[in-house]
Length: 295
Image 1: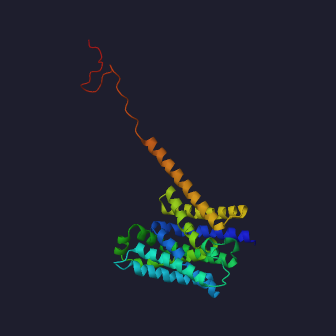
Image 2: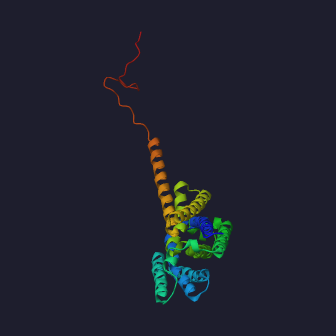
């Protein structure tokens, strides 16, 4: 299997998995949290690379600490959730940059972690994405109804006797797992795109969750495939190409659905009533219109 073949498989798998989990991210309004996670996981990846251990292990363990930290801060009454996420976002990414810059003679280029190098992925990376994909399917299959309930009616979910903390941790750790396997391919900065844009694009076309999920998976997989092909053909960064393709699909969908809605509104407008011409009478009761001749 060539490097291009592996890159294509990685991009399609990652796009499909990202599309699946992106539905929950969009429904729960977690794009900013996901952005924070992609950046805050960066120090774990750098530490793993410096120590010579598996990148997934380092990124995953550090990501778990970040998830727990954000949950702890967000549950303090005096602490706004957005503020907590913002602090983790900037501090986490800055720590990764400091660690990398302080390591003299470190051979890894920073861009390899920030924008990814999908053409260097190996068979182990493909297996990692497949395993995480199974975890995502298991979560959605086993707790899909609870996740939807929690997303649309948080108060009712708690009142029904469910434990929000349990389902929240399960979802956030699954999102973190997808982020960790996405970093080697598309980088810490661009990973958020494949975790948000597919569902955002799908939601422009439909509001039904099964349909959103199907369109999101297809959008993610197609973006990955097209991005890798464009990168290979024109010798441009693969992570950037995938991100641009995803953005183009979203923009085209936005334009198409906006145009369709405009046309529908135009067609549904009632026709203006015809004006009465001078000399024409009204025929309703009491009108002065012409009457049949009487004998």
